[in-house]
Image (cartoon, rainbow, N blue to C red; front, side, top):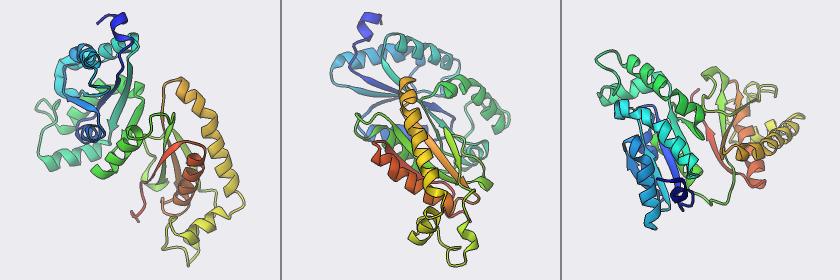
Length: 293
């Protein structure tokens, strides 16, 4: 495929990759349901010519390619294939599906299937090899989705939010509430701390309610520093948006944490989402730890 042939191809390309067991198949099916032409487990060396053929056909304008560790030593060609596509100005984005070792081990044990890189050793050895193999792709990914605490429906909603809407909207955001006691979200681009606000847990009438309850929401938002926090947070996103887009990053995850992810972070995430939507940012709200207590 020559540069002159490729640079005018009328096709958008998404490369879906990530850890085995992290949800690549679910993400691929979600893209297919959104009208993307999906090719699974294609040899990486064949990606450029396949995309060129699809683009020239005139019938395919959005194509998703799934590549993973099942390709063995052929997987090494993936980075070169991406470099060739970008050198020829093909619009390609990389989506990386991530999950914790604990979650992946649980899923593999449930399916009773070996890891493709296990090589007769322990499952965690296969995961370690895979993380090393995928390290560069993860670092260069346009969108990282951590599925450790997501079910298949949550993952589909994230894919829908990223790829299913009006393509004219330049930046898409996920606003994620979480509890610090359950750990930081690994897919967060920006982490904000709402623990400086008074905790509704210590108000007896609010303790058993959540940040989705109007009474809890009002209690949090009416704190003197809450509006300023939201002003600064939305201003930060507005400031960074141009830079993200300039660097080709169209998706951002803003995580807001409190102690348990039940009251303050939930209310602040909901209110920040309203502000972002008002500013023209397509936004998905996810409450990671709501209901865990």
